Image (tube, rainbow, N blue to C red; front, side, top):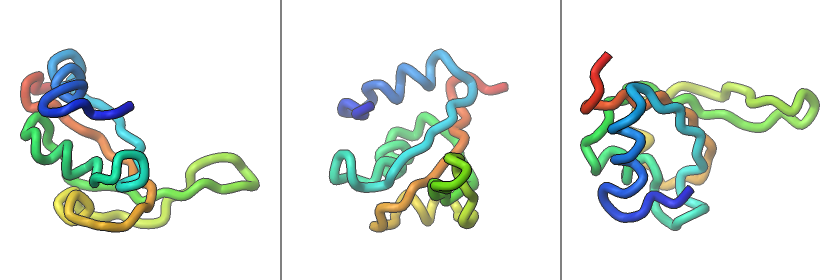
Length: 92
């Protein structure tokens, strides 16, 4: 899903869901760091990103490592990350 300009679809999620699970490839789909787009909105709080890769045997995601949201939102790699985004609008 393309994050359509600020605040776009991200603000929709922030206004209806207290927590949003996001699995993304950082750069490839839109030539922009997806997590930087999320960070720039200021709509969510996130701390840890889990780097994951697809396991071809089990067809599941395998955890590769943990990284700070701040570091990943500034990264230029094209790895897969999953993160829980906590809405600042809907605090739980």
